[in-house]
Image 1 (cartoon, rainbow, N blue to C red):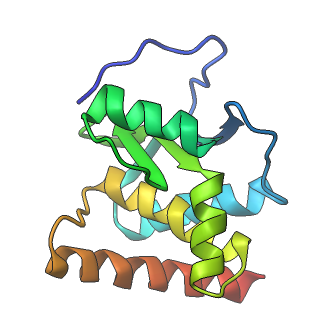
Image 2: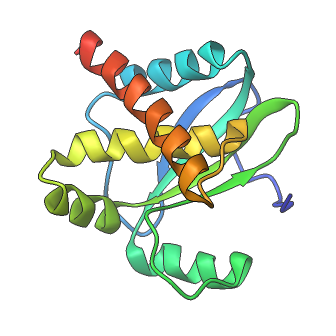
Length: 153
């Protein structure tokens, strides 16, 4: 696991917290998204710690991908877990990638954003997508949780 220093003002109690780096972006209803992600963690029979979701640009996330993971590619999400017991970590999401993916899949930006957010949480839980079988299992869980969000909306 990568060790990062605590950010000034980092939350100390469990929950999902949202921030932005180098972009002006916020979700329309952070409370609904936060509650939905926490419910997904409970449904996976895990305990939530502190999860920070940081929205950023392609450039910002690309630099992180190169610096921390030695991958010289664009990506929509990078997840940094901080605990093996609690579901805690940072999830960095490129709003540029999410927007492009939404157009490419003919879905709404917000739908794709929620897919990427739950994808990051599933990585924190321990799901992987590094082979076709694991990727299919992760996609099934994403679809499951997205359908539950749609029922609330």
